[in-house]
Image 1 (cartoon, rainbow, N blue to C red):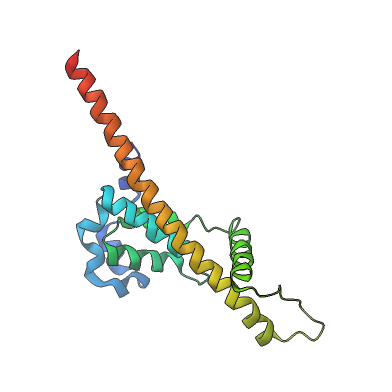
Image 2 (image 1 turned 180 degrees about the vertical axis):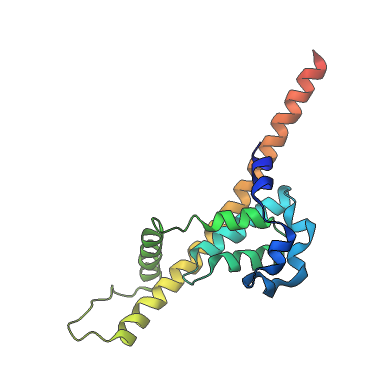
Length: 169
């Protein structure tokens, strides 16, 4: 059911070819392997999307597509997983990453002074933020990959058991 819903909403290959931001991926984006979901491609897509969601840069979707292409992942799922990072969750996610970076690096929290120096405060915030984001990106990508693989295997085992019980009856 979900598979048919996704297929019905997927853009055509001509639409993808004409999209100006997606041209950087060339014809590789149109390879059918990237649009077919199996255990490997789903797990890679979840990992790519979750990794890209933690990066504090614009264009998360393009990063997720590039990672999915690099590791042969299912592109629609990689794009969907990027949306873990949305306008409601971005502030708490990056604040948690910043606090984790401060803890790991042993830096004190940045106190903004009356004589605000954008360069100084931005650099002081950027290092812990990037450290925390990178660690959380790696952790969530690995966890997402493992849980997707385990969930897929669990689903297959349930199907095998049902099939076996139907044959025995």
